[in-house]
Image 1 (tube, rainbow, N blue to C red):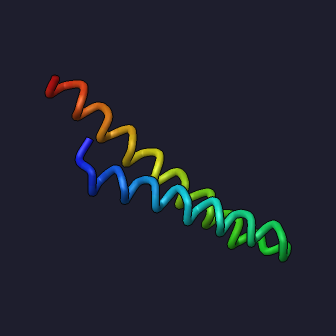
Image 2 (cartoon, one colour; image 1 turned 180 degrees about the vertical axis):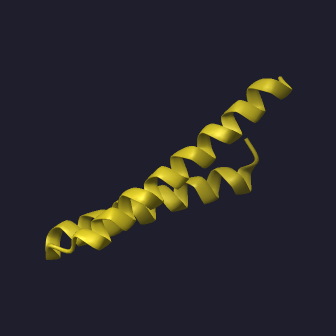
Image 3 (cartoon, rainbow, N blue to C red; image 1 turned 135 degrees about the vertical axis):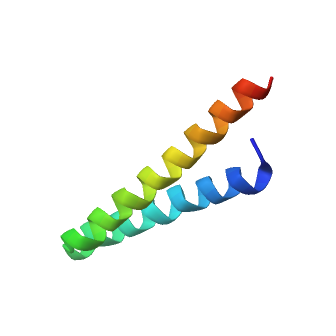
Length: 57
């Protein structure tokens, strides 16, 4: 996995976790949903890179 793509995936996942936790704390469903979406984007990016790595090995 390219280091920059891996870092970007982990950053999106972390940002999503923070947003989701903040949304739950203040009771903001929209923020919670945005956090879950950011985590999903990070997960998808990470999965894509793992597949690319597996195919190139």
